[in-house]
Image (cartoon, rainbow, N blue to C red):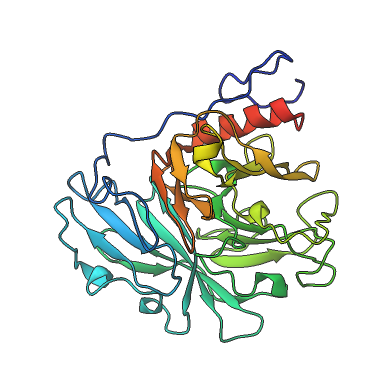
Amino acid sequence: MAGLTRSVNIVTTKNRAFPNWPRGYMPSESWPYYGSHMYTHTSNLMLPGFLNFGSVGSSIMINSTNSTTALKMYNGQGVQQTAGNWNNSFDMTDGDGDFDTWSGFYMDRVDNKLYCLLMDTSTDPDTYRMMSIDKDGNIVLETAAYQVTNTALNGKHHRYDNTPPLYRVGGVDGTGNFRFDLYRANTPNDNATQPYDGVRLEINTSGSEVNGIAANTISETTDGLIPNNIFLGNSSMSEITTFMGPTDNGIIGGPSGGAYQYMAGRVYGMLGNVNTGQLNQNVSYGNDCPFYMWSLADNKPVSWLGSYFFHPLTAGYVSGINNFSRTDAHAFLDELAVWYGLL
């Protein structure tokens, strides 16, 4: 199809088959890691640690169902690490005592930093700030504090399915601004009422201006993210916030659940084209999903070392192979979009 960006060989023929899920992503420099043999259950989400840790097997523990619990780091033998601010666990107040909530995480494989988007929920509207930590427990307050205008951004805890993921422009680690895109937001009214045109936090963690955003600042985009407003009727579904992407072709999406035992490897979720404003919920999501989602469990992806890890929210669990390279995942989204006529 004209205009389709191909980082891989995307099938565009009308005779294309319904896409299969990509293979799991297990890079040798980080697998196996402490906790990689556990299934991802409610609470202790184990993710691979820093690539420059010094030995294979380190990991970071994040409570996936609580947005105020401190993070922990372990070596490959399961010994909790205590370097710098990892000592006695790493808390969001370690960098700035005014902040009380984790809102998003991004583990960068080039910077070898864990970026953490923090919220101060004592202000109205809430205040955001970006902080990072490295393997030695060194903390950097990457941006100044920024109090938002749009109240739809209030209360976006990491563990909620209505909290968008933190991603980097272009999907490239080590460079570029971060973005936090909330599509269920009304920018003319600065709230969460319909119709939705979306609100974005663009976060510059560099020492110079990038994309019109001043160094080490957060900026709020108030002119909408998509060309057409979104009307969801009385739907309480919120999958348009739990997405992978956007791909180079503007496709976002991800599975949100599925009665796996009844659907022969199928799960369902959201798929959309942000360039056209076409967003679809409860879409059947590819053949042969390699991970299991309990049918009552919402889940979301987190960007981690060039990949997406899926983890559960509230009740339930995700198990099996639930980690996919960013490149493969974006190609899969584009394939789905072609199949459904969104590209």
